[in-house]
Image (cartoon, rainbow, N blue to C red; front, side):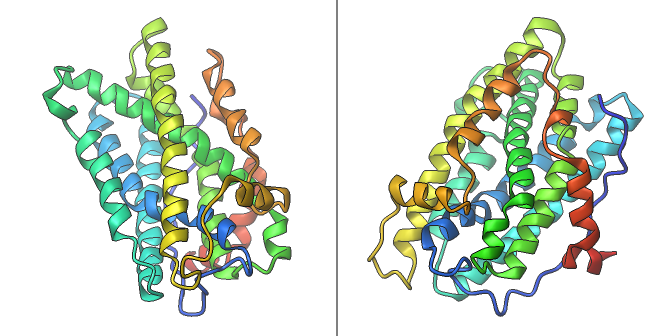
Length: 291
């Protein structure tokens, strides 16, 4: 486990009144690939907090307990802020409810307090599985968080400053707390080979489900976009164009996060740059306004 790092929520706020629907000008595909975050995170990060709350009585290390509580506060704030973006999309006539109800079903029913379909999994084992899924998701959010902090192509493309601040504030906090979910899983996930096997299982489930949700979510947003009016469909070719422009992370960068995570000796403290995250949080307009 890494030493306690003073993780705490920042009570930020954002004014969306001037943010356009295509907040990366002339780049609807890149815009909507990024917008999938808003579809997934309100329900997903509420679920993180709920699962961690269930696991709190198992935490015996006071430093880890402090970090877990800070993590929960940060994730709850992320959930609220991304939900506000969904309201903004709805105000621009891009309704997301038909998609987010499936996301709600995933987190509230399939990954809820009890295993789906009354599957006979012991309560402790079900908690350990869900903690392993959160640790795997946090591997990707750490990689994405570090990427957005260095994605200067978004600035050159004229991306909306408020949206960039939201994504970079969030990304910096993901880097800041990148080890907490992993440490929580390691602390509560058993011992030895069984604990490692559960960690592998968590990533085995998480990676394909995240990919499927991202592709489905981008296709949904592109199809429902009132400004496009059906003139564009999401395609991997358009996605790759945005990657080459530096507007989206490369597939190989995301894919390489998986074998790193699966090493027995792995620890997320090796991901990203704490110094870069802290530097952005010092100058983020939203984070400074929350100080």
